[in-house]
Length: 218
Image (cartoon, rainbow, N blue to C red; front, side, top):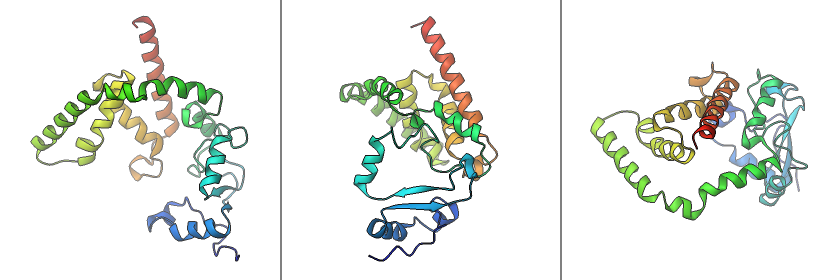
């Protein structure tokens, strides 16, 4: 089979590449001819010193990678394959405190704890409450007449639900929204001047303070 007609330095994660649409054709070529493909990027970019990253395109291979944290570590460099070019190594390592960037057995232990709140029975107990919250959100947005649909409607129910599950006061849910956007929105011009590591630290400190308060007042 002929090799894929893709330049070695074609960066699948380049925002400019994705601006015109997802590289569906290139990914299809890889699945057929080179399902595991190396992408060259400048050494040291985004806090890494490995000259690039691997693209894994077959479902079976993706499953294998996901299951083998002993070989394919999320902790070492984080689960995100590339960071902004100016990001320093120490900033990358700070991301290890995020569950997404942990490996077994630590990740497994935390996942077991968290999953208790997401069993069918636990979620079923929230159904009536969330239905009422959804109605309240829709009525409030309709009463406003106009506004930002994302802020007023689409993000409100998940935020209220997550705050309720975590025991975060509803008046603090905007903090969760801001921190999560700042931590993950590095390529969004709105958050370009914000240090995601600082937002991550603020979230961690908030959680630690909440845990301390829970310990004093269970």
